[in-house]
Image (cartoon, rainbow, N blue to C red; front, side, top):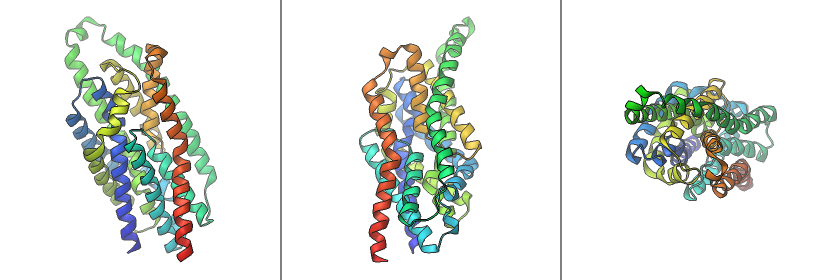
Length: 321
């Protein structure tokens, strides 16, 4: 019965991720005026699902066993940590989505699992958390650097007479292709945030966990995904179609590398870092610094708040055990 509750909360976590992170995949497309909201949601649902079920197991194993070794804990402890880590992370992501902030679901779930481990005074793999933290810091910088390198090359490409002749068709084709690749990369990396702890409890395989997460994420994208799309697409930098292509290529490549090594990183960090990269090229006066400041603050608070919520929930539950 306890594991059934864990499954239900993991579905809630997946829903909240879809609601917040859909913006990472298609927010820039919609903001640049090339893609309709409906098309963006369909692309995100289809390709994030494919990414989750094909490559999602890599990062799922890290979340499930790499932060707190849930598979070595007693049954009750592992399931309670799983249950309330997912609940704590999902509550914070839901609040952030309501406020239209693109926060990191990876930060949220890692902080929540660590908070659950602290509540039970279990083994916490701080060295692994340290490695993940370093990658978190590097993620937006990596995307920004790639975007800074790619954007001038794309502008040069579209200055070629033959390309200019078919400019609109090529732009639309590239935007749809790059958004699909970004959705695929996001699904592959972030599905672990919803279902990684499930395999840590030892009840289901990583493949089944990926399918469960993919379904929940799809529902989140279709029901509430439009809220954060507004922030990413319209409120950071005024985007052009060529900027959007560079942003999505930079972010996708960045995330795909981390996914290959099983490292849970933030798609939000990656896409916003790429947006900042092209924004810097265009000129700092193009940037909405108030929105940028609010996003960075939400990033910093995410693992702390999720961990604190989980810690408090478990301490209350422990009184009744």
